Amino acid sequence: MEQRFRSSENSEWGDFPAQTMCDETRDFPIPLEDGKNRTLGELYDRTPKELISKVMLEEKVFTTWYHRRFVLLGDACHKLNPAGGHGAVTAIHDAIALANLIYCMPSKTSEDVTRIFEEYHKERLPAVTESYNNSRQLARVSEKGIVGRIMRFLTTYMPVWLWRIALARTLRFRPQVGFIKAIEAKGPVKPVVSASEQKSRAMFEGQQTTAASL
Image 1 (cartoon, rainbow, N blue to C red):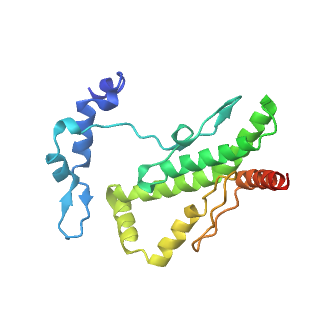
Image 2: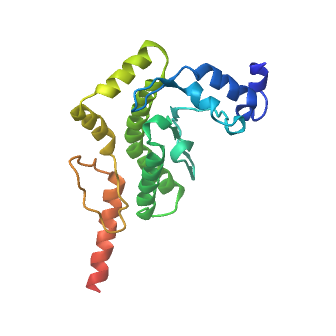
């Protein structure tokens, strides 16, 4: 029955998949500060049935990000698990890199459009891949069985210094818009050099110098 329902239109929004999801995850523990043992089932029982729905979650970094004069960013080319909290951040950074490259694009020819899309993909792929891997690791905290228990134990008792190292791997990717005034980089984590920002910053500062001399 569920298989037939999944093959129909809008199957992820139906009552049957939602109920199946609740049944399969009822025993998942909910860690709270008061120390009492609670489960997701208790949360489901207190939630009106009409407010419970299920959607399909895809996690993937796609190979193709652009074609001719079309380019993708955010979830359209890299879908990250929400557990990492990086989805919106990576999308915003994609937009920044694209804006920087479009700003300093020498012409509107197909060759130049393809070239900046290649530069965009080359710059953003390492950061997106890092966020993707981190999100998948954090998502394992909610897994059933021994793997989930181990991950919950490690994340609960992980030393602060180790957390900082893990966070620094993703926080180092933070490009800025190059055609406005730069913001001073603060904090102990030094940002990775953004090629698109450097490129647009050089053009922007050159234009400012020229305008000042006129």
